[in-house]
Amino acid sequence: MSRVARLGAFIVATLAILAVGVFIIGSKQYLFTSTYQLKARFDNVAGLDAGADVRVGGVHSGTVRSISLPHQPGEKVTVLVDLDKSTHEIVKQDSVASIETEGLLGNQYLAISFGSSGKPDLRDGDIVPSQPPLQMSDLLQKMSGILDTSQQAIRNATGAAEHLDSISAKIDGGRGTVGALVNDRQLYSNLSQTTSALHDTMVHAQAGVTDFQENMEALKHNFLLRGYFKNRGYEDSAELAKNAVERLPQGTPMKEFTYPAMQLFDKRDSAKLKNQKSLNAAGQFLATNEFGCAVVVVSAGLGGDTQKDLVLTGARAMVVRGYLVDNFGFDDSQFRILGTGKQTDEASDAGWGAVRILIYPVGTGIVPNLPVRGPVATTPKPQPLGAREN
Image (tube, rainbow, N blue to C red; front, side, top):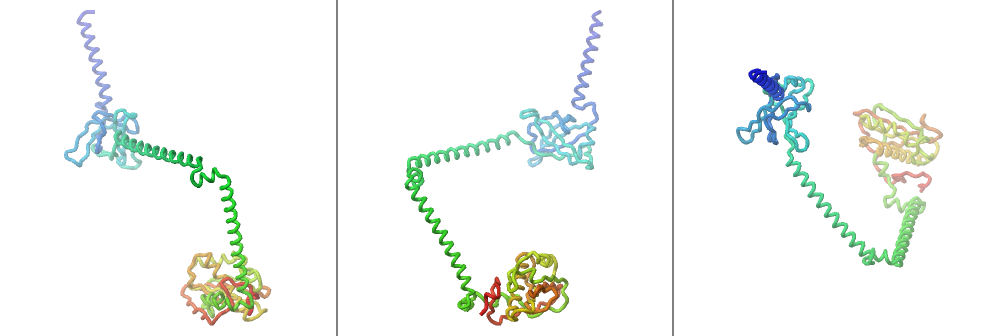
């Protein structure tokens, strides 16, 4: 091959290599690809340089064209990037630009997140929102603070361990109260016996108090000493008269609950409740509905003493009202009681009487309370009437 031919071949090969290099560089810098430009602004670019990669979803999709400093303090650094046109479909106005690092100490690159479906596209020259980069210096400073705190905790733990060693040595040496208890078996035995004696004394004292209370309760209902307790306020009419009325309000009830007295009370002459859950339907109605007033009306059967039955029905009405007020949340200021004494009632069973809860609509007038006319043999927790005879 002649010299001219070799020279021509060399020139052709050189041009080919140059062309290939130009196309490779052009592909890298998107010189020969359709692109559009976006801007991102940061307080600090954390070492990001012009020519750095721009990645969308972790895929290389552009380059950083330039980085411009602000014109005055208070403004941000502007990063201008070239993005491939193909990213138009996934980069939206709610996409976020951030400066990331390859590995722990690698190069910085600009990452842009995917946008939301339905959000408008970013146009050429728009500003994409950004978030501040995580700088290594800030991370190291936080780690330093954590290490300082850990070291202080270790020193505190070491000091506590030294104090425990000192205390253990004193106990082993028999010094102090605990050391004496541990090392002197006789002292420990004496203390144990003293503690046991104190416990027995407390048990006996508690039993004595319980017996005293039971005896006082029995004396309270004793025939001879009953007047003594009555004069000191143990038994009066205040609890019954507090919510008692002489008659029912005018008008028709909007709801009525009726129960045989045998279903609710344990004895014929007692106001002690049983089967309280039978009243729950009435309580729930009072708690969930607006009403003008409500009255618990209790009657007794035709047998028995008239005066006793009058007191008994009032006590029963008071107990029923107390159960409903205590267990259901409603305004009890309009809740009254009425003991009618002997009455014939279809709900009455075996001469026990009946309990009716009458609920009146909003706007119904309240009947005035029954005035207190002197002491009556009743208590807040009524007992069988036979135990209260004068």
